[in-house]
Length: 179
Ligand code: SF4
Ligand code: SF4
Ligand code: SF4
View 1: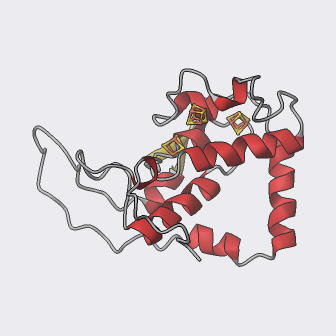
View 2: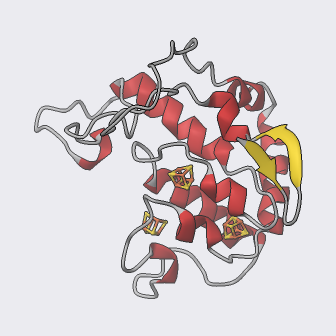
């Protein structure tokens, strides 16, 4: 799919099409045409490029992004995984994050939302697409996606029956996972 601006069609592929590795529908009633051969697995090159930067560079990058956020919550409103009746960002007791539109609170808002979608985000990238100030939300989202893939061999949206790993537990789960 090509990218659209407010009133114009570009000749660029949408960013999500670059990393999509699911060209055949997982579930369908009727498949138009034949199944296609899937390409190689996602190499998360965008995440690797970010990780190659120093801690200071990444901190400065996200600090600047946080300054742009206007807390419109369009990212949340469009997200298929954000269906909570009371989102943490609007709760006052306890107050998880301040209501002030300022870099510190904005950064906290975006970080917590990314964690809430860990293991449930389907990489549709709608949140980034609708963000009016073009914050690259795919970076934290895909970082979490890769983490869940590495730790649990799990990708959201690939099975009707699978239970997302971060919404269940076994009594003998290791506490030191990831160490
Ligand atoms: S859509 Fe963009 S500007 Fe709006 S709350 Fe989300 S990150 Fe902030
Ligand atoms: S950001 Fe978290 S609390 Fe808010 S709607 Fe999304 S999943 Fe729910
Ligand atoms: S990419 Fe993930 S976090 Fe963003 S809208 Fe889609 S499911 Fe939600």
